[in-house]
Length: 215
Ligand code: ADP
Ligand code: AMP
Image (spheres, rainbow, N blue to C red):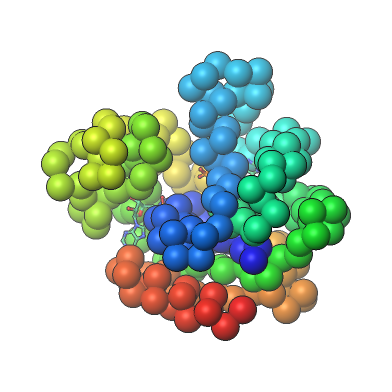
């Protein structure tokens, strides 16, 4: 099964992905996580991408497509994958359409998680992420048991550089302009499943499960 999580920054894609990959045994592919790891390790990819990420812009399609091409070559992707944060432009979606038949796969469903803008801003500015395992927390909505310590692996939590209020506003604009067109792209292919993401984490997951169980 190949599933795409679509939705604005802060919609809860990464949070819901943690449960989806466990319950459906899917390989998790987050281009954001891959890019942040490349920045942290000072790889060439990270050096090329950092400037765009800091500004809240999209990293150029060529770079992102290369990352996904490489990842799809790994044998674990043969059994299906969950994409988070990819594709983010129509160009990237077209690339995926061409690449998937090569691994005998196709897009089974695109879950569009929709959340009101005020809520997105509150979620993003209060987000904390584990520096070791990338688990996602929120100061108010999903705090760890011990302050600043990951429940799952004991790693330190940090605030992403691009979760400042100025960059968050830019990222929301970028989503509307550059990623928004993917909604009709996938609707036209009859694989789009909108989910109201405004409710609490477990209620949203129940709705996602209801969609995935029917695919
Ligand atoms: P995305 O991957 O779509 O950018 P995240 O999963 O990182 O979003 O979630 C953004 C922030 O909102 C995190 O701090 C997360 O803990 C919190 N969050 C996620 N889903 C919900 C929800 N349904 N209700 C409240 N907070 C949420
Ligand atoms: P995310 O972790 O999904 O919020 O992504 C963080 C940042 O990484 C984005 O603001 C972009 O700068 C970059 N990024 C992640 N995925 C993509 C993508 N598919 N296309 C372009 N840029 C991306």
